[in-house]
Image (cartoon, rainbow, N blue to C red; front, side, top):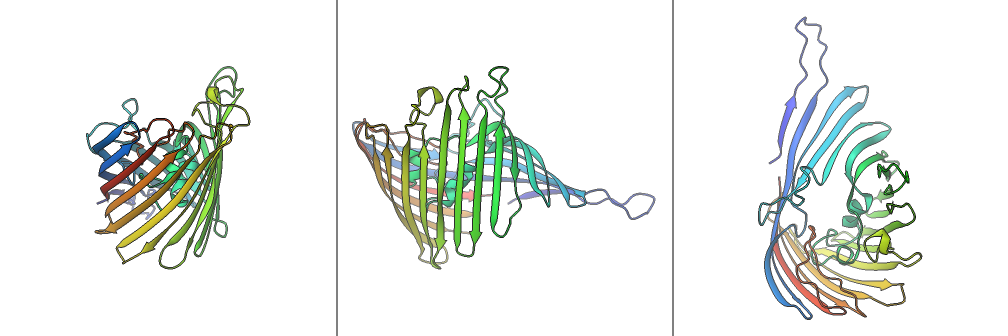
Length: 347
């Protein structure tokens, strides 16, 4: 249960009726643990318990203060942890997921600090697998940065269903000045049953000569008993580091998926995805996926997935959770099958 600590408006002792601005802080979190079975070419099978299948585990604090005149001060601190061991997701940071402060009003919101990237926030809008779990092809084959340090960000108010985001992450180098800087843009549009999304990000290398580039696009349509999703990704981060990239060489991933509400609590979903390598090596991949979810309550959900991922010509894509956790990577060009059964609780 969310714990809210409110500092109510306090009347001045002189009885004038004026009050201090009201503020509140909310503690929230996600607990997600699952059992997994994977079998990969050349590696055999693995049975494991892992944390963060549908959503990564976290505990966070978010707060707001009404400054008057429609202006608010906001902040968010968020720590990631491993529910299966109790360990930290990142032992070098206290708040590895988010740590920012900002001001919001009718103009939108401005934030400063460590923040989620638009790409990370958008993937859940592009497939039936919440942009995570073994079943999410987009999660398994894309290599993008989910959050950046030293970010200055702007999020617009909704303009007839359209919201825009723009961010700059400072590399904080003396020379070259723009080395390791990152730049991000995102746009989301919601109108009735239709939602559309687009974002792009790029991060300079330390010498400011190359950039890691990633773009997501797609949308969803609610047909009444479920949703149909289309997702697309294009990135040049074949080596997941700017120094290993080749100028003009990209790979693209495509995903189509849908779910169906069997009951008010339960859904079933399926999807298919494929990745195309433009380097000439044709290190491609394809995946077929299934997912089932069942809501025990508004906060507690059971989920299960099945995924079959097939690599080609030396590709080594594998299955991961929201963590992500990849424990059984096939030999080059091999296949991997995986099953998850998990429980997620929100508090």
